[in-house]
Structure formats: C-alpha cells, structure tokens
Image (cartoon, rainbow, N blue to C red; front, side, top):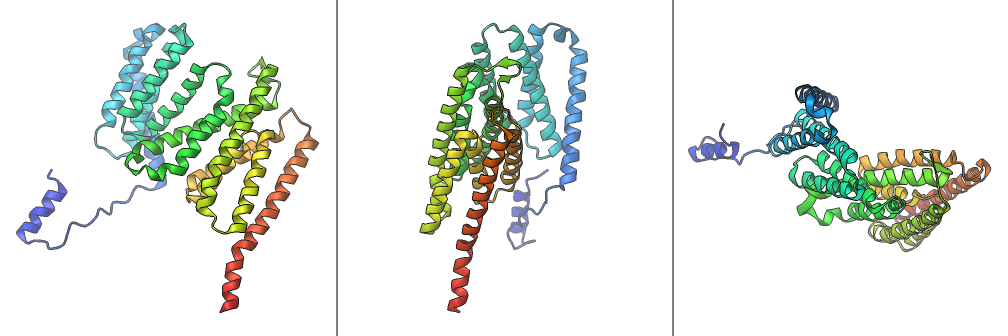
Length: 354
C-alpha cells in the first residue's frame, strides 16, 4: 500500500485536490474496548506461555535451564515491540510475554546464583537492555520498577530503609522537570512511572516497619529505628527543597507564598513522625499543578491507604493517633479557609471596582 502522504502529493500534482492533506481524525477506542483488548492480549500470552511450557517441558524440570526459555520470551517481545503497531491487544501481548520471560530469568537467578549481589547486577543489566530495546512504555515502566528493586537488593538488607529519600528525589524531580526534556519524552515518562511505583512501595514498607516490632516474621533490630529516623529526616529535606520551585511556579502572591511555605514546613515536620507523608502530599500537589488526573487520583488513594495503615499501626496508642489526625485535619481546614479567602479576594476587588 502506498504512503498516504505520497498518494496525497500525487493527487495535488494531478490537480484533483488543492488543499493540504487533512490531519488524521482516528479516535482511540473506548475505554471498555481497550480493557477488553488488553485482557485478550494477556489471555493470549497466557495460552502462548502454556504452549511453550508444554513443548519445552524438559527445560522447566531443571531450574538451571529455565533462563534460556526466559531469554527467548524476552527476545521475542523485543522483536515484536520494534514493529509498527498501535493496537492495545498486541501491546499487552508483548508486555505479558516480556514479564513472563523476566520472571523465568529472575527465578533461575534466584535459584542458581550463590551471590545475591551478582544476581542483582544481572537483573539490573537485563532491565537496562529491555528499557533501551523495547518500544512499549509499559515495559519501560516495569523495567524501571524492577531495576529499582534489584538496586536495593544489590545494596544490602538495610539499603531499602533509605529507599524513600532516594526514590523521592528521582520521582519528584522528574515529575517537576520532565517538561524540560521534550526530546526524551518517550523515555522520561515511563521512567517517572516506574520510579513512582517504587516510591509507593518503599513508603508502604517503611510505614509497616515503623509501625510494628516484626517484619515478615523477623524481629526488627533497634538500629533500624535509627535508620528510619534518618530516612524521615532526609525525605523531609528533599521534599522541602523540591517544593520550593513548585511554590515559586504556582503561587505568585507574597502572603500566599509565605503561607504555602509554612504549610510545607508543617508537613515536613509531620513526616518525621509519619514517614512517607511528605512525598505523597508533594506528589499530589504536583498532580494538581500539572492537571494530571491519573497522578491526582492514584495519590489520593495512596494517601487514604497510608492514613488507614498509620491509624492501625501498633507503635502508638489509638488516642494519640486520633489526636494527631484531628489536629492535622483542623489545620488543613483552617488553611483551606485562608486559601479560599485569598482566592476570592481578587474577584471581590474587581466587583467593587466595577
């Protein structure tokens, strides 16, 4: 089939048409159609994986040879992802095949590698190759997330305690400055999504560790509590530093800007007692400032889940947590009234002048 642009140029040369080629008006499918096509792609990938497992059942018996099948699935997903296609079914099929291949490779590394650091390095190298080679944004987001988890595995058992400030710096910084990298938008946005997922997971793990005396059946040593305080302090400092350019960009009024700074300092202080609260609120604020509905609603759900986990934590009494939450809610309501007053004051002044 001829290129539409070349065909339109031939029509222009022949005098059949006189206007430039109209822009494509093809609308994306409806949401229920995308969900149906995506689910069909995952089912197709599942049956394809079952077929592969039936044919190569001899490889699956020996865990040391599973990685070969995983590499084959990853290579197939890379080849298919570089072809031109925009269908939801094909994208989800490729993504599912890639995840299945990565799962087999990670399983083989975990079973056969005696050095956890070497296994983590291999997983990071695999994710870097998949991030560079694939053309699907979902795969790049998943590669970023898995690489972040492997990086914590590489750094040691106490490294994940510092995951919140590390991932806060990466995720929040990219959310704020991603518009300055338009040439790398295809790579920056999936990386931001993967880092945000890693940040949410690290906040959940930090809150669970901070709220209980054991974690997955293991007693938490006292030294971890010191690391958690350092983590909370670092994340508060990072959020304050990143909140300042956001306030400068979105708040122009002098008194209102000072009020926003006071709110940021108060949230940073609360973060010392409720680790992970400041990054979630800053992510929510970035979503509001950039009118990003997905980020707004997902962070709102994360904030609700965070408050529920904090309320049912075991390190403080219910009375103490109820007082803290009531004070926080009262302060937020007072601030909402002040902000609403500042927001309506220009309108009232304009009506008075009129």
